[in-house]
Length: 405
Image (cartoon, rainbow, N blue to C red):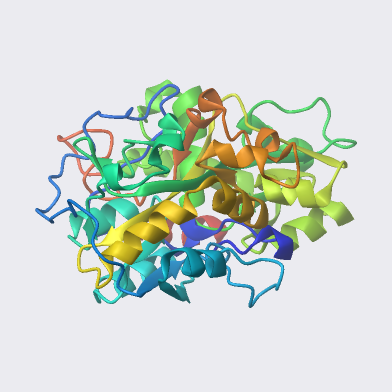
């Protein structure tokens, strides 16, 4: 499962659906202390020669949209939640929306050539580029592109060699949540759920996905430099083993692993869990009894991008959609409904909750730079090493099964 709108109180779970065997190069970010910054070398692959639209033509009358649930609402879920109908009226493009449940499903559907645009997460975007299924985006054709936060542009998950392959949509961090009356003093480090997890034996919770290995790798990267980790998604066999060992020790104190947000909400409300990884939307749902922080080591997280298909049958309507969905009004509607920071922060003046963007750190570039965005681990080391082979997502999946026992 993946994210569902916040008004149905769900959130991000895309990493659990990463492809078991990545067929294309990808890379991760986290500029604060380690990840590649905008414009730096990105995984060492050359994007296929896919043509870019140089000018807009007549609208085709329809657009085929692949989207995470909650990204293209037309009122059928909730009559009061509809930003698709205004788009159709403005452009004359009938929106044919298909929701997907996993990044792998989205990638396979894009290969059909039937879809114009897709909301790709960081574990999918570079795979779509490297496979030739996504086209470069001519940002000059997008009137709202200039209003998108610069720290989301030209990044290693949405561009190659300085060429954008999509339009940033929304983003967020995986946070450390704790029950304030129980966990004292307030934690500032992921060490609270790793080295110090025994203090909360039987009440620690962790995200149920192989990609959670990256959280352990990030902690090791910051606290045990001798392990040599420079990118939490680029682990050789010894580094993966170190992360696995840390997670096995953690398991002795884990109450449950969760991927269903409702289970985490219920566990914190009942007291069965008092500390563990979470998303801001879940913390907000639980309320004042908990707090959620970005630890001093930084965190993993996600950034989604609207991309256009290399074989898009309706490219003009596709561009119209990408421009519309990143407009301030649409961004405000999606971000609040979905539970994430909008890429276009002009949306912040349009949210019903005046403090929404502050809560989600929408304009905080320093906060965003502490996030290592989810990326599929592949055998080609994403940290630039060429003298060794890294573990891939299949290896991580096997390791996660071993960790959980």
